[in-house]
Length: 190
Image 1 (cartoon, helix red, strand yellow):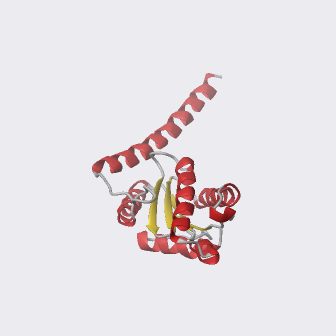
Image 2 (cartoon, rainbow, N blue to C red):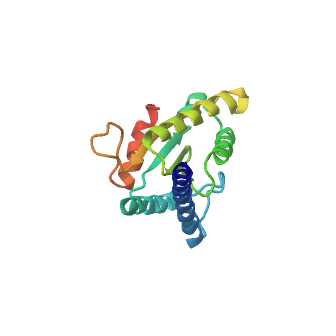
Image 3 (cartoon, one colour):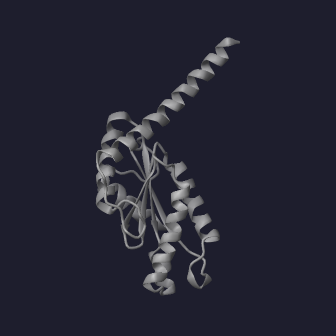
């Protein structure tokens, strides 16, 4: 009988250890440098994200932990509705405010890659889980967040994972540039 409680305790300790490593890695990286933030969204800039992604790839190669990214775009929505600049900025800020509440503080990383594209890094997350997370983000954004003129926001998302086991049938990337390109190509698939 005591074996079960010992095994359960061991499993719990391992799970907590992995979460601690992920948080420690994110905190250590953050403390290494004071990074510039995008003035509109208060997210990391593209340059900072590229540096962080390179670190994530190197860490993944060393420790075998996967990570996934979600590319989120509002470009089609803004073009379709011909939003004014201040309206586009309002929509972007509303989406970012929602994402800041949803991502794991101290673990996930979010950045503004260009005017209307955001990138979210999910350390330790498989492709399937990232795809489910992206679907959740899309559903919530489309149903709960309103744009000026009371428009429902339509967001497009793409997902990619690094690294992936051989023979898998989901997008895989070998380096940072390929990872981002893969997620952006998948943008209409989710």
